[in-house]
Length: 253
Image (cartoon, rainbow, N blue to C red):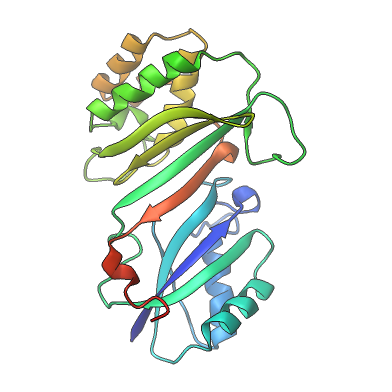
């Protein structure tokens, strides 16, 4: 059996998240069905992580295994993209080692959350339209405090099955990109619903409804009920997934 990585992107608006759902179409389901049809054999994919309904991915990785040869890469990608709906695009397919794993081999994941104060026809479903004025400097003070902690239970959805709530944050900051206010956050792992909850709570800080000290107290409390409500999914993008260089050794070799 040969294992392959897929690099893809998707607009989450029309999907009920990455993972299979009993009540809606997921990206994983569409990808598996398309690969199975194109390769004429059952194909099952494992993603680098799951995204909620409505959340987008500028870069996502998944892997699958097969015991048959694949068509030439460019032709395969071209044909798959013609079969996939407009909301999903495959960028690359390449062989990896037998132990390389889309989820467990990943060393970091980087998310962006986009906020815009005014509606734009080009940003529909891809930004959170939020009109209240925000103190970005104070929001950045709150964002910086996150780098001093590792337990983020206060920002995890309550009904989630995890062994622990520790994440190693490598970046946490708000920056203007044109007319978008963007939260950049990178970590070795994220808890279920964590980024949206962080954003929702920092928006309270930005509006002056919560101090930075109160925000830090929420982190220390390790209690989800203390944090603010989660920001909506449409502004959130999985932007980059990082792996050791060894994973890419066979890429177009």
